[in-house]
Amino acid sequence: MRVFITGGTGLIGSAVVAELLAAGHTVTALARSDASAAKARDAGAGVLRGGLADLAVLRTGAEQADGVVHLAFSNDFSSPEALAQGIAEEGAALGALGDVLIGTGRPLVTVSGTPAAPGRPSTEDDPLPTVGPVAGRAVSVNRALDLAAHGVRSSAVRLPRTVHNRGEGGFAGLLTRIARRTGVAGYPGDGAQRWPAVHALDAAVLFRLALEEAPAGTSWHAVADEGDAVRDIAAVIGRRLGVPARQVPEEDFGALGPVFAADQPASAARTRTELGWKPVHPGLLADLENIRA
Image (cartoon, rainbow, N blue to C red):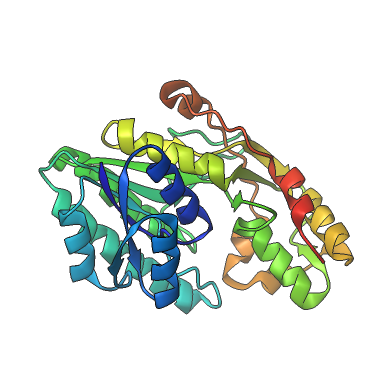
C-alpha cells in the first residue's frame, strides 16, 4: 500500500514509518524542514515538502496514496491561544485529507486521545469529550469518523496520556522537561490520578493494523498500561534527575493543568481482541528508568 503520513518524523511517527516499511508498505512523509526531510529519507520514506497548514500539499499527498495516516500536531502548549491555533490548524488539515478520500474506500487513520470515564477505565465505546481545552481535536476526529458514511474507511487510534520510548515522550516527557527546568518533579493534586501509557513501538503496530484492517468509523485504544499514578511517574522522574518529587499548583502547568489533574485510566480490551494487538515493549515506569540526569 502507498501510504501518505503526516507527523512521520516525530517520536510516534518515526516508529509508525518503520513499522509500515517493515510490513512492505511504501511511505511518503510530509516534511516541513530540511532536517525532517533528511530524517524521513534516512528511514527509507519518500518526502513531500510542506507543513500542516499547506492544504494543497496535503491534498496532493492524499490523492497519490492508497491510504493516509495523520499524526501531525503543533504541540505548542505555551498558552491557551497557541493551543487553540494548533487545534484549528489540525482540523483544517484533517478536513482537507478527508475530502480527497471521499468515495474512494481508502483508509484514513487519524489520532486522538483516550477519553475519561468517571469511576472506571474508559473503553473504545466511550465518546471523546467535546468540552475542555482540547475538545476541538475531538470535533475534528468525529468529523473524520463520520466520513465512513461517505466512502472513506476512516478510523481513529486513541493514544494515552503518554506514548514513550527510551524514557521520552508524552505527558511524562513534559513532566521531565519541566523538572529539568524547575528542579522539581511536580504534579497537580494528590498525584493519585492515573495516566494510561503505551510504548511508541507498540502504538506503531496498532496504527498499521488500523490502516490494514479497521472497519470504517471505528476507534481503537493504544493502551498498554491502564493507568499509572502520576505521583509514581513523578517519583521515578525525580529519582532519575536527582530532584524532589512533590505536589505543585495546577496553575503551574498552564493550559494543560486541568488535563494533568484528571484521572483518566483507559482499557484496550476490545482493541486487543478484535484487532489482535499485543503490546510487548516495556511499560512506562520501567521505560522512565532510561532518563539521564
